Image (cartoon, rainbow, N blue to C red; front, side, top):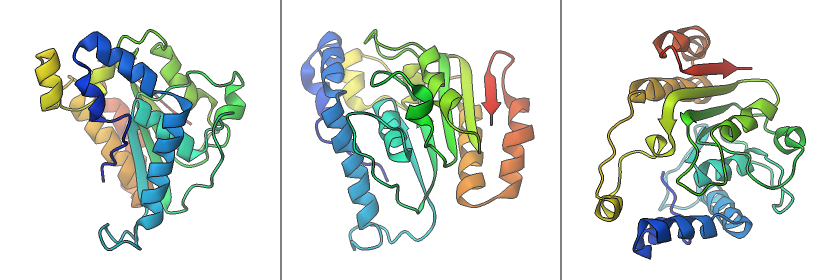
Length: 231
């Protein structure tokens, strides 16, 4: 399921120019919008199995997000932020995957901030994943959540040369019209798909072969400059 978040969704693409779009993105990434996004996901989780318009989900659930979506799933996974309330995560959520995670803003004790993320968590980023020109984050910052999470099924994969938009999927028609671009698949796409699929299989399906492959097989398909760590 892909959840739309009013106020920080594709309505931002109506701002007329790339510069205006960057300003709109920056304005939308605030604590109030983050709280609304987290509530959107909690609402969906609460309704699964009870609302006939939604799937009757009984199997374990995985959460994933990119960029501000990654921050959203970090919050649901247990990141502690001074401006956000702490709400227990639905017990059906067994694993979390974040594309372009981050530790921007809100507090300096990162061990305290990320120390409650106990469930399996996969951080995927790139060596050039420094945002969309907002000038408020570095690629190195995106590794910090992993570095400060407690051990236990935590993974970090940094693709050499990977940029922020490499993790955003195909460009939408609205993006193509504004920027006159079509995003080509990144050179590491197959490795990204293999790694994320193995993570879901290992921690949602309790697949021991997938778990073993994450430990010993994944490094063998990466390029020399890619970096992989787990704890």
